[in-house]
Structure formats: C-alpha cells, structure tokens
Image (cartoon, rainbow, N blue to C red; front, side, top):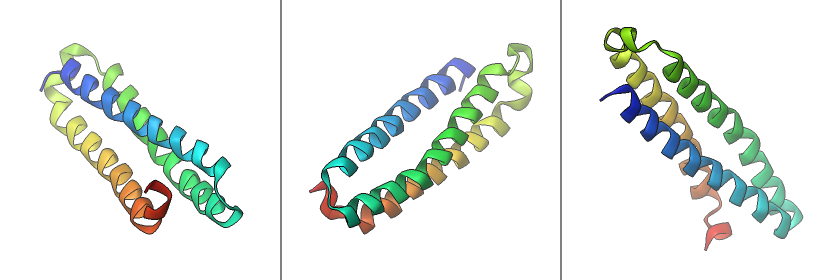
Length: 102
C-alpha cells in the first residue's frame, strides 16, 4: 500500500468515527438523564482513542517519502492496532446500549 493510499484509508475511517461521535453527542441531548450519562461516558472513552488515531495519521503523513518503504509495514501495523482499539470501543458501547440506536 502506498503512503497516499494508507492516508486516504485512514482519513476515511477517521471521518466515519468522527461522524459517529457527533451522532452520539446529539443523541445524548435527547435521552433520559441516565441514558445521557451512559452516552457521555462512552464519548469520554472513545474521544481519546479517536485522537490517538488522528495522531497516528499525522505520524504517517509526516513520514518522509524516501523513508516510506523502510517504515510502511510498521506504520500500517500501528494504524491497524489504533483502528482496532477504536472499533472495539464502539462495539463494546453499541452492544451495551443497542436501544439508543433502534
């Protein structure tokens, strides 16, 4: 995978996750106090993971093109790990509060 391809994949994923967080924040306004607290707790857990993913994207973007071949496997693996943590957080949240999304 080229650097541009990876960055495009990452940006797409970050945009999708950011949209999910925005949706959660909007839903928290319309839910009962207890449900809103659960949603806010999920947001508090997920936002740092998204920020870590954004930081990883910046690290990849800042990698010099002439160094890309030397570090691409490591950076791809790091992104996959950051992305998996974020997805695991979403899966955990949505499985515990499916009623918010039905």
